[in-house]
Image (cartoon, rainbow, N blue to C red; front, side):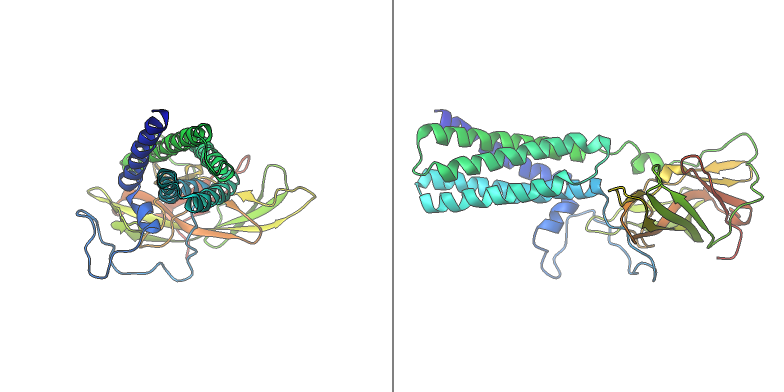
Length: 356
């Protein structure tokens, strides 16, 4: 009875996790599933991205560690559950050879995924998702180890392994649920009208010009990086890239001012073991113009305009380039505008009215 109960729980959990992955993360599932045949139409409501490659010379930002964790969790769910179901089938049919193969496979898969997950430097909001994911992997690996060592099987080992598979599935579902929660500053909150200040914008007589570098060190002085504002461009509408494009449209009478940034890791110094440096977050940037102050949208990721700027950890010689997107009124004149960034105790400013 216990074995039957555990198997039912596992089967229900497998179905729940698979459906969670399918409906909560359609874009990621598309990346780990076979592509549709040519000419086949995707799900209704998808927005197709117009033609146009990212601008030449633009460095498309690789995924952040938070995004890598989400992709890891979703991408792992289907193979882990497929192997688990194969183990249950092998137990039911008393196929010891298949059971041994499946047990070895799930242990190898879980250990590899665990190694990838533990090195990610995720944000505090995603630590819970990673914890659930690692617990799930440990349970799957433990189940595989029990099944591989317990052949020929006895009832006690079988029940223990099934319980661990069920718990692993439950924790995997928890990790998927954590990953599906929207960020605090999601697109719904960042597409509002720009914030206005009552006081006149400050003047910055010593502001940097386009192409001028500002060099900064990390808090321990172990790594150096340079930040450059390269140019500005405009758009009324842009689309995210990927299998589920999202359209961003400026509000009535508004446009997007796109400020191109480039951050370069200049090198490591000293005897420290940390060779990476943090780039400033999007929230560290403020656009000043006349009596108004603007803040950028949260990073939408790769777009048909090019890569978007996002906070990352850069390794030696790595470069991050992308756009900050500001929603501003039509007729906005960048000649009198300034971009300020807070870097610890330093706050460099660039004048946007120069020649890029």
